[in-house]
Image (cartoon, rainbow, N blue to C red; front, side):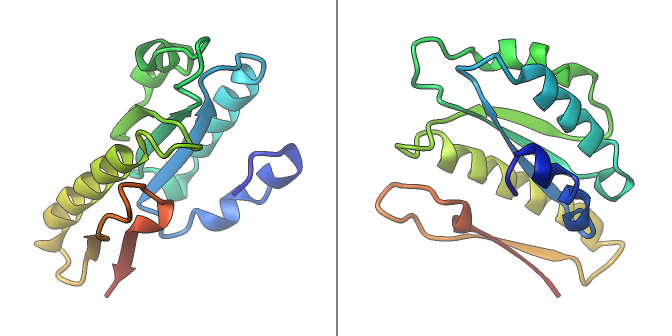
Length: 147
């Protein structure tokens, strides 16, 4: 989903049955931090996302003025986030750097979460990592299906 203001009102239509959220921030531009932080915190307060795992991609990490992950975590107040497992992953969308690592982390966390839930509900979810594609990660490299 896009982050443009006119699209944000529709975000909650996609929350039902979501087990994870991938949120992308611009690590090299502080001009939208306050708006992005407010939208992020409003999103994770939604009841449909109460247990969602959060992967935050800090895009443009290759830029000389990009902020470090720990600095962004402080700016976004991630240490205050409760009830969600989260990770902030520096990345470069143009080159794919960091995307594979982030998606691997998310797949591992989802698999562990589903393994815990499987004993309570044997239907569960199945998380599959797709084979690498020319050493470039795509968001489509992670598939999640319900049974």
